[in-house]
Amino acid sequence: MSDPTIKGLGAPPKTYDGSSLRVAIVHARWNDVVISALLQGAISKLKAQGVKEENIVVKSVPGSYELPFAAKKLIEGGKTQSSNAAPSMLASTTNLLSLLDTDRPSTPTPTSQSTTTTTKPSVSTRPFDAIIAIGCLLKGSTMHFEYICDSVSHGLMRVQLETGTPVIFGVLTCITEDQALERAGVGRGASKGHNHGEDWALAAVELASQTAEWSKGIL
Ligand code: RBF
Image (cartoon, rainbow, N blue to C red):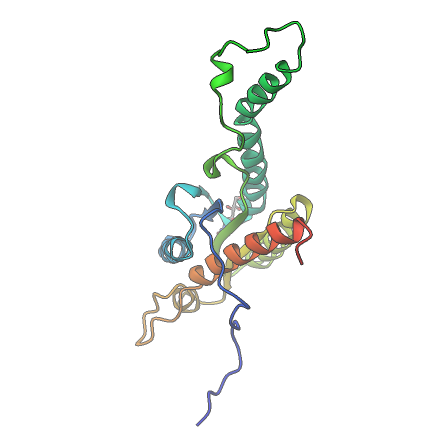
């Protein structure tokens, strides 16, 4: 009998290399059993895609409601960190300009500045190429679930469109605990389910790689 479902993620058009990427994961701490499994799934898949451990930054916030704000601040922080790392670039540029100064000796005396060779921030201080926001919302007996799901999904979408940095939607919105456990690959039944954290890592590497190319006009 053929597979009874057509649901699920199709194969990517190519394999992406994450070795030059810097990715931040921000996760909520509510419903920790599920979050821990999703986080581990995401980290191991990022590494399997070539993202270096030192280029994976993990931060936590109390609950999913905090994810959009934290994602935005991390993106901004990554850009600030990158520009703070830039003085070495400025130093070498200044030094090159000094060669044009006719008052100076034709053979410039080496200074501590002139020994600066850095022209590009290292991967670990460059802006984040993608953010993965991980949370697990479980429906309770009040309307909290609906409000938080709505705010978080719209908030994360807004952050990625405003900043131009891909924000992966790693938020489970489940009616039951079993649904959440199965989507984190730690189901209580015979089938453990599937860890969606792995898919979010793949999405992060794919979107980061595509964005880098599309931004340069490589289509
Ligand atoms: N945060 C989650 O990430 N998942 C939840 O299932 C969740 N349920 C909540 C239920 C209630 C009644 C409240 C008050 C908060 C809940 N939060 C949950 C926390 C929420 O995302 C946020 O951290 C807090 O509201 C503080 O802004």
